[in-house]
Length: 215
Image (cartoon, rainbow, N blue to C red; front, side, top):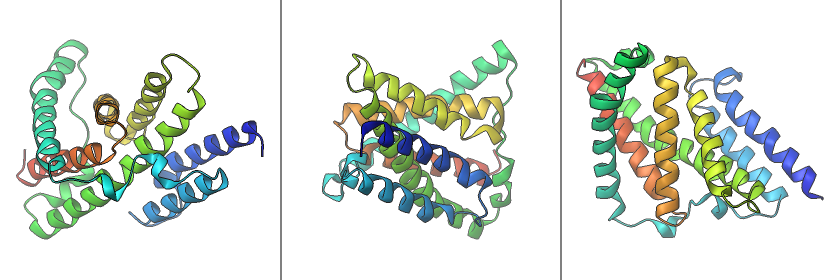
């Protein structure tokens, strides 16, 4: 099979990965294993190991946990105390619409369920799909270019932002910047996806905890 076929295959898979969770005929959260199977199938057709996503069990170490937590605390503080107020003051962009998660407010069981989902879907699934698969496919496409990784990071981060369009303009901006940070972690730690996964999971946990407490 020739390269144009693989390019078309990857782009088609990326479109499906972006659309299925929002518009597919699947119940909430059940799209994750379906999309992961799609990724595995596409990589197999290209004779590429799943490890090209940056996800390898052997790469995990305990030191990743405090790093991920520290980056999550730093990012949530920076965004909510500096970037979001700046957006509100300069461009009159209101906070992200997170009303979909209001069902966890003061409801501990719902809160525990959604935090578990955040670790599995936010930290795990989304990082494998976006930074692991989508970004690696664009990086492969642009590998001959001088700034191929940066270009792949920009495209992937923008797609990640648009993936959160239901949260409004602020949600798109936040998710795009968040994606850049995850890409930075992936590059800084030499393709180890665990750093982004743990950071992502901790950030979601902190954000959900604030919603649960009524902030």
